[in-house]
Length: 353
Image (tube, rainbow, N blue to C red; front, side):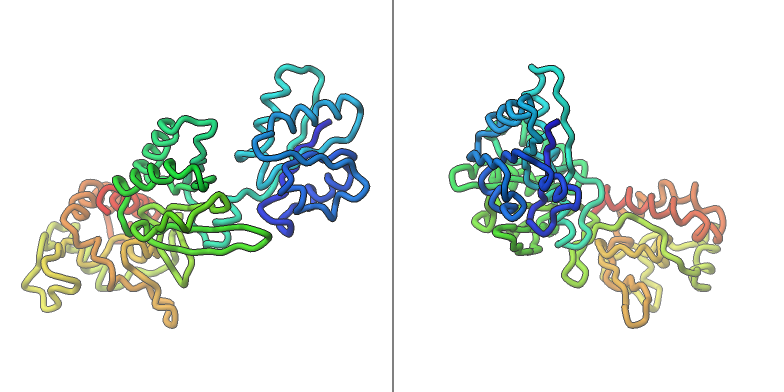
């Protein structure tokens, strides 16, 4: 049996299973840079190092040694199934019979980078920007589709000294589709150390990116909190409905609310002029999502909407009103239907933000 072992992005991130599998191996085959990371585990073994670009050769060698009866391990960085050796070996072994393969998973670059950045992943797409094996037109098509669908995007192999065009094309698409304020996490891992930066899409410097970099591009919901990149999942936060909010929605459901700008209100404008005051009290409170400007007042553990103007945009109000009557029949529904209300909020943020 050939075992493909993912050693993760750094030596200390290797799983217990990966370490144990390497200890049991008789023959270990891999790229020289990966072999170097685990040399302390390879004493007394037949170690074969091959250069970058010789992935098929590594797979063929592993098969040859397996046929001779050796316990063979094929080393892959990160996770073998994410741009690793698992795909290569399975493709090569298609011309043979009687072979057995076991994939030992590892920590992938995208999950490792996400952990350093905070919690940026929700629904996400991982795309390699290497055009060595994939035509650039295919890469561009995938980036555009994922960007337009508001996926979190993770880019592998973004840029080398000679291969710079795919990253330029990726940025061009993102600038067309995403807001320039979209958060981007840049994680560089080299020689068992990592550096982390979080910037806006508009401030990315191409020269800051290389082959040791993993890039995670946030979506419309991704925000920055205490230096961490967060994409909320939309959980309902415990709260009680304020008496003034209850009174407001009693009037709203009775058709007695004020639509548009309420310039007669003593607090107008509570945010900026002009503003749509249809939802003086937000039906989603507390959303717990800072992507639209709200925030926690941490010393009081109170959600503040002071910085959120999204609820007072005309297109936002129009989007909410199209479906709110189906969800809000009585004031108690602000609590009882909160999960559905927050789903409506996500839908409207996607359409209007």
